[in-house]
Length: 142
View 1: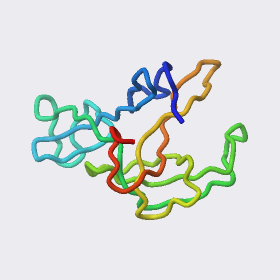
View 2 (view 1 turned 135 degrees about the horizontal axis):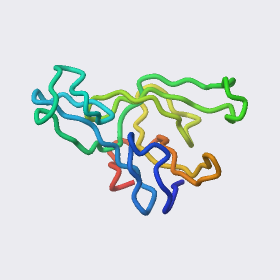
View 3 (view 1 turned 90 degrees about the vertical axis):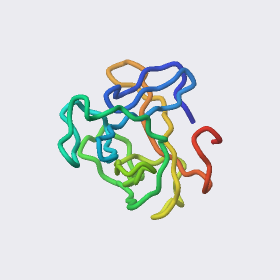
View 4 (view 1 turned 90 degrees about the horizontal axis):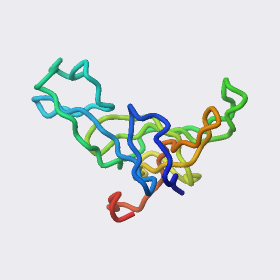
């Protein structure tokens, strides 16, 4: 499932290429700590800022560390149920993400970032999601 030729629903968090593949951009500080998303305020770990921080492309792959099924959302327009997970990205940061095609996903399941088409304010956008992948499969191989 991918969103083709549509813009990222949240360009500050991720970009989307023409085939719908998301690119997450994080921050690396002088000590090698990685955080997500990139922001100009500096490193969460050591306070580095300015020239001491660099943008780093994240693989968009990780491991589920917690998962839950959401049956009630405060906004009745949001369809339920859906699966929500904490994903420890391979580079270290933890993200909270909606899972797709993940009925059997559990703690320890490997996942990768994908996009799905959605409509926001009558505009087609690509929303970030994570989906299970077989162990050892990189984004390029998937």
